[in-house]
Image 1 (cartoon, rainbow, N blue to C red):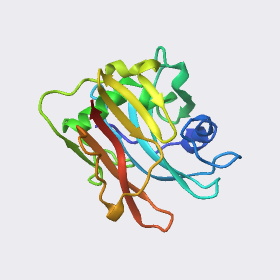
Image 2: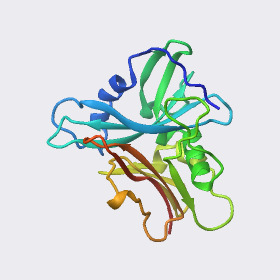
Image 3: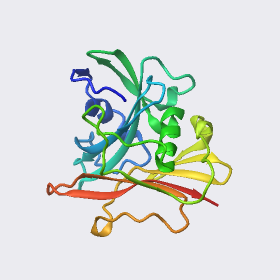
Amino acid sequence: MAVIHDTVLKPGKLELLTSWLSSRPWYQGGAGAPQLGKAGGFRLDDPQGEVGIEFMVVTDTSGARPVRYLVPLTYRGAPLDGADHALVGTMEHGVLGRRWAYDGCHDPVLVAQLLALIDGRAQAQDQNASDTPDREVTRSRTGEGPLPTGTSAAGTAAVTDDRDGTELLIAPGTVLRVQRVLRPAPDGRPVPPEGALGHVAGAWHAPDGSRARGLFAVLTSG
C-alpha cells in the first residue's frame, strides 16, 4: 500500500494545477486564473510501488458558476519518457525529493490501474490516509475475460480531450472515457450509459457542504 506522507510540497498541488488547468480543452472557468479548492478524490496503488496515483476533484469558482473537475495525476521520481506534453509540473516533496507530476490519462501506470479498478482487481484507497480503502468509490464490470492492459494509451494519438472529458483508445473499438467536468447524478445514483462495459463512480463535496456523486470513468466498446 502507498504511504501518505505528512509533509510539505512546494509548490502545492492546487498551485501547480492553477497554472495548468486553464490550458485544457475541457476547462470551463472564467477569463482569469482558476480559483481552486479541493473537493475530494481517491488514490490507487502502483503494484511496483514506484508511481503515486491520485484522482483529485477540485472546484473552480473563477466563473459565473462553480465547476468541479476530475484531475487524475501521477507522481514520479524521474521524468516519464515521451510524456513531456503531459507534464503538469514539478514540485519538491519534503520526504521524497523532486517529483514530476503528470496528467495521468497519459501515464500507462494510472491507465492500467484504473482498468484494474473497473475489473475488480484493484481497490480505491483513501486520498489522505495510508492503507485505508475508500468505500465511496464504486465500480462495475460486465462481460467476461480480461480487459486490455491499457499500455497503448501512453501515446498522444490514443488520448483525445474534448469539451467535457478525455477519451483513451485502450484497444481497437474499446474506449475508456474519463469524465473531467463532473456532474451530480440524480438522487446521488450514478448510472453508466446503456451498453457500457464498466464504470467508476465517486463522491465529492458540493458547494452546500453535502456530498454529491457522479460518474468518474466509463468503459465502452463498439
